Amino acid sequence: MSSPKIHSKLPSVGTTIFTVMSGLANQYNAINLGQGFPDYQMNEELMKKVTEVMQKGWNQYVPMQGYMPLRESIAEKIEFLYQTKINPDTQITITPGGTYAIYTALTTILQPGDEVIIFEPGYDSYIPNVEINGAVPVLIDLKFPDYKIDWNEVRKKITPKTRVIMLNSPHNPTGAVLMEEDIRELRNIVKNTNIFIVSDEVYEHLIFDNIPHQSILRHPDLSERSFVCFSFGKTYNCTGWKLGYCISSPESMIEFRKVHQFNCFCCHTPSQVALAGFLKNKEAYLSLSGIMQQKRDHFIELMKQTKFDLLNSSGSYFICGKYDRISEEADKDFAIRVTKEFGVATIPVSVFYKAGTDNKVIRFCFSKKKETLETAVERLTKI
Ligand SMILES: Cc1ncc(COP(=O)(O)O)c(C=O)c1O
Image (tube, rainbow, N blue to C red):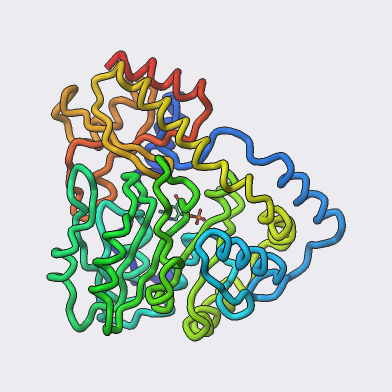
């Protein structure tokens, strides 16, 4: 008897470069500047709180929308940061991470044949999330080398089928951020249309040089047509917790919750209970951009000893570097060789383009201990 065969919903998805590079990093004992997470411990107090609440018995299901005191703390925080009143009961849902929030938002909105504007390079989950819903990604390149959005190009690509514009600021992999003029352009484009915005703001607190984060939540006319997605993992150095949340209008949130409640239902209880109190500590999230900016600046300074030319990074914990003074190799080959021969793993930026556009740029993650960055750069100077 032959076993049943699956007709793949994502036939073109294979093993990602992240798995490949991390495997190589382990095999060659390389320093991993590829993976997007810190190599230092998360906040001690928050760890203690989770343990405490578990011991107190917070180990059963919370409501499907999320633990209410946490949603209330989020609403307070949003009002403090972005001067917007959000109803914690009807507009916030706690999710198992930012990626899940994005997937659920897209699944909530999309019907087969709908078009979604996605900028490239971009976070790798967006295109499969659109395709699995039978919708069509409409890809637009960010302008190299500053990776700004070409809004004229966006205007040209809008059709009656356009249903979503996908945004990500601060941006992975480039560190580009949206500015006020981008918001103005976006506003003009979506006014009087049926277009939703899905805004990936997982790096909201990782923004440098005193640039204000242009959260969509600052702009009521835009937020009423948006799903805005956040991640506690990125804010509190605990990416393995996979906890985040989504904010939308009450009407849209009703539909979002229909999808969510039959997928995950509710998220990890002890983390939610601990975070409900911890979110009130403003210093814990406000200090983050300063800490990360120092790491960025230290990395930029160190990298001056190498033949890489770093591009600008105004946010996230990533910075891209050109290597055309070193080699003409394709970026994947170059990144693999640097891992094997010099012991530093990075990510080739072509993997963030569906067509594999290769500008001879690799991505470094600088959310690492000072010693990690220094040892890595010492190795990179030998290239
Ligand atoms: C742009 C972007 N969005 C979302 C995520 C994922 O967030 P989470 O781990 O909370 O799912 C990442 C993580 O790398 C990211 O870079």
